[in-house]
Image (cartoon, rainbow, N blue to C red; front, top):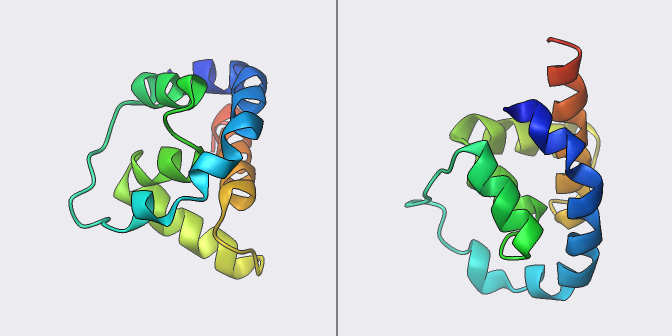
Length: 100
C-alpha cells in the first residue's frame, strides 16, 4: 500500500504548501507520549485534506519512523521541520520502491 502514497505525493505537496502556516503551530507537536498511529492510507488522506503536515505523517506513522527521521536529520545536519520531514518521506519512498 506504500506505493499508493508515492504516486499521490505530488498532489499532497500542493496541499502542504497551503498548509505550512498551520503546521508551524507548536501546540500540535507537544505531546508525543500518547500518539495514535494510523495505517498509511489514513495518513495519506489526512495529509491530502490538510489536517496533517509531513511531520504529523511521520509522527503518526510508527515509532520506527520517528526514530529513523530523528537519525536522518542528525546525520544530515537538518532541522526537524516540514521540509526535512518531506525529504525523509521521499527518501523512505525511494528505499521502499528499491525494495530495501
